[in-house]
Image (tube, rainbow, N blue to C red):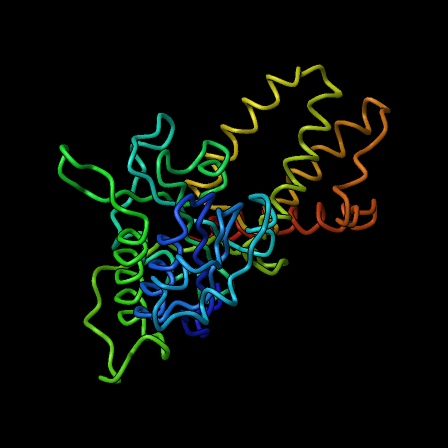
Length: 306
């Protein structure tokens, strides 16, 4: 992470997945603009820019007009470095890792220093799907009364938008200081640090880069006999591990090297990459492997000096 880069609301993207009520879309636009959020993406919405939506977007019609409408999840997050999500339900694999809105907002502010970070809201009746949950690095829930546990979609956008704005102020984001021109007092230490590498740049991979890595692993797993069901289960757990612990670009290269070694040893056709994603050449992989070994040696030397 670039410690010198300022956090910014301009890097925060709100994603509404399969909203079924146009008025909720309009109300969400108004909530976003109130909190300084401007980038909205809609996945398979119902009549997103009609009269009902516009009437509730009063004063925020520009957010609605500029919203990106896509047909599927990956089109909405392709260029996003970190996806975060909201849920009103306990999730079997992630229920112990659910953050409060304030905690999630601190992560959003921190990630916004480096690039686009998305906060995703699910459809009104059932929330986020399992596939959507799987790509979220951080998940959050709101502590609500048990007799009425779920928020209206626009209410949720407003609540998280407010928390994100407060987190941005704590982090000193210039575009979140408002008329007061000052931030609020810090609240704790914020998200943890990121691993460094002496021979590699360290940045967050895009969702596209992560999908490329998982597809390469799936190709290698198929070569050694994993069934489609086994591959899906294994890679789902691995993705959850990465989302909890975090993963940076040079760490994805470790998996590419592993997958290439497996297919090479078995003498099976190697992975040619996702459509539109360039394949890593043998020379690039050799260079990556050499850098990883040198980095491990440097780490060992530093530990010996302590």
